[in-house]
Length: 115
Image 1 (cartoon, one colour):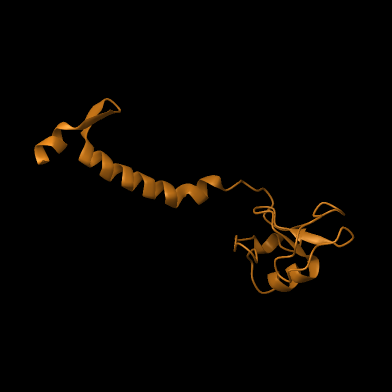
Image 2 (image 1 turned 90 degrees about the vertical axis):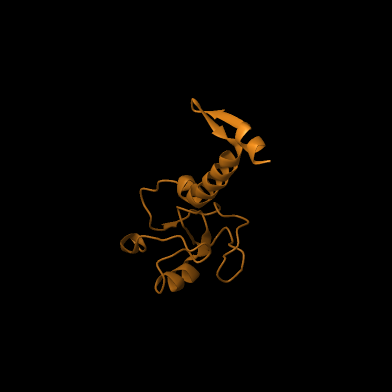
């Protein structure tokens, strides 16, 4: 059986690799890819603070802190790196204690939070 495994090879990057080794490499590379995936998907954001949205932009969104809907006549804060929305009062209460998004815990720049 071991002889068969050594004869089963895969051609990759100009070299022949035994299939047993290929499966181990695949598992390792897949795991590393899984670890790095959130880092690769992160969007570069020039302003990591919060922005106050204009009327009607967040129609249909719910505040993840108090779970009430965000009406079109209410001001809301939008976290730019993850696009999560919150009522201004809810967000300000949370952010006075934690420099992270209340929903996904994305880190926010404390200097720019209330600017």
